[in-house]
Image 1 (tube, rainbow, N blue to C red):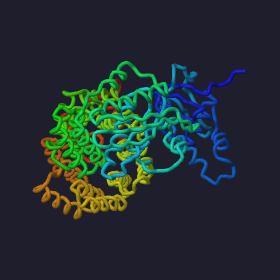
Image 2: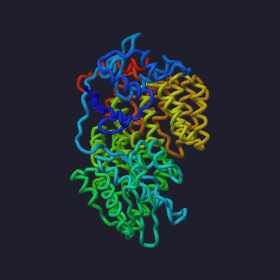
Image 3: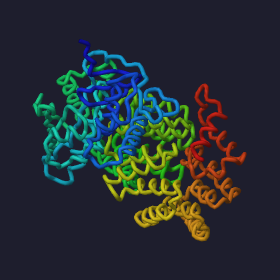
Image 4: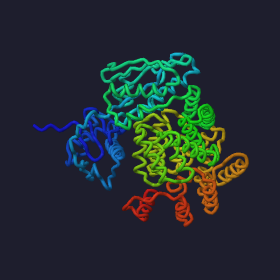
Length: 593
C-alpha cells in the first residue's frame, strides 16, 4: 500500500510533517498553528476540493465557541502570505467560492541530499567574573560565536537579539528550544582574567536533552578571534554540518588583534546594539578608539559605518556626517578585509546617501553569500528591495530575517514597515501590536503604529501615538515632524502649521530633514511647498528620499509631473521584465484606492 511521504516539496517550499515545519529554501517559515494545519490538510488531498466544513471539523472542535468563517478566512490569508500566494492568481491554493479550497501545485517527495539543515541557538554565555563591568565582554563573546557559526550555510543560527531575551533565564532547555524552533543549543561560560580568557562550552541536543559534547578553552586575549573560529569548527564537526571549501577557509583564516582594540570594539558593538541616538554616538567613540589602537582593524571600521549610517538615517545627524561617513568607513573596512558586515554597511550607505540601489543590492547579496546568517544583511536588503518597489521580494527577505531573529524589535519594525508599504494596514496593525508585546515602549514601533492608524483614517489614535513618541524622545525633531504630519492628515491645520514653525526654528541649531517637512506640506495639500522641500531634500541627500516611490503619505503628489521627475532623478532600478510601468502604476493605484 502506498504511503504518502512525510516530507514533500512544492515550488521552493518543503513541508516536513514529522517536524511540523514548513521550510523555504531550507529555512523555517514562521507560520501559526491553524494556517499550518490547513496546509497539512490540503496536502493530504492534492488536486481535490477540501470544503470549509471539512476544515472546521478538523481544526475547530464543535464545542469551541469561535467565529468559524472569520477563523478560516484569517488562517487562509496568513497561509497565502507565508507562501507568497494570492487568491486572484493562485500558484498553490485555489479558492472555490462557497465550496472550499484546493491545492493545485505539483507535489514531489523531498529528496534526501545529505544531512538536513541544523537549527542552533547559542544562549548568552555566563560571565563567571560576576563583575558587571565585564558583562559587555561575555555578551560580545556570545555575539562573536553566533556570527562565526552563522557563516556556515548548513546551519540556521538564531541571532543575538533573540537569544539575549534568555539571558539569566533559568528554564528547561527543551522549552527554550521549542520556542526558538531549534534542535541544538550551545551554552557555556566565559572568564577573563588578566591576559587570559577561558571559555567553556557544551552542545546539547534538545529533543532528548542529551549532552553531545563539551570542551574548555584557555587562550591569550590576543588569540581570541582564532578561538572563536576553533569553537565554531568544533561545533560544526560534532553536529556533522558539512562545510564548503570557502566556509572552511573563512573559519580557518583569522588575524591576531590587539586585546585593547578588541575590547574597545566589543564596547562599541554593545552601544550599537542599543539602537538609540546616544548608543550610536557612544558606539562610534569606541570604534574610533579601537581604530586609533589598530588602524588596520576592519571590524572597527564596519562598526563605525553602522553607527554613522543609522544615526544619519534617523536624522540624528546630517547626511554628510551620517551616511556619507558611513560610506567612507565601510569602503575602508573592505579595503582591509572582505566581510559580510562591511558589505552590508556599504549597501546601507549607498541606498541612503548616493541612492545607488543597483550597487547596494550587489553588496547585500555578497554579504549574504559570505554569511547567510547575518540578519542585518537580510533586513537591510529588504529595505533596498522595498524602496525599488519589489515589495513581494522585500517581504520574503524580511521574513528570512525574522526566522533568524524572531524577537528582534528592529527586524519586526522592518516587517511591519513592508506591510505598511504594501497597504496591508489591518494585518500590519495586528503584527505591530504583537511585536509591541515584547517592548510596549519601543518608540519606532509606536511610530509605525501611528502611521498605520493614520493610513486607516484613525486620526485620534495616530496623534496619540505621535504625542507619546514626542514626549518619550524629549521632542526629537523626527517625532515632532511626524506629529505635524498626523495633524495635517487629520485636518488640524493650525497645529500642523505651528509644528512647521517649530521645526523651521529648530533647523537653525540642529539638522532637520527636509523630507519630513515635505510630508507635512503634502498632508496640508500645499503642493508647491512640498515639492520645494523635496528639492531641498534631494540637494542635501536626505536619507529617507529612498522611500519616495512607496511612502503612502506622499500620494497627494503622485499626479504632479514633478513627482515623476524626482523619481527619475533617484535612478530607481528598472522594473521587472514583463511588468511595464503602466501595469505597475495601475497596481499601485488599486492598492491605494
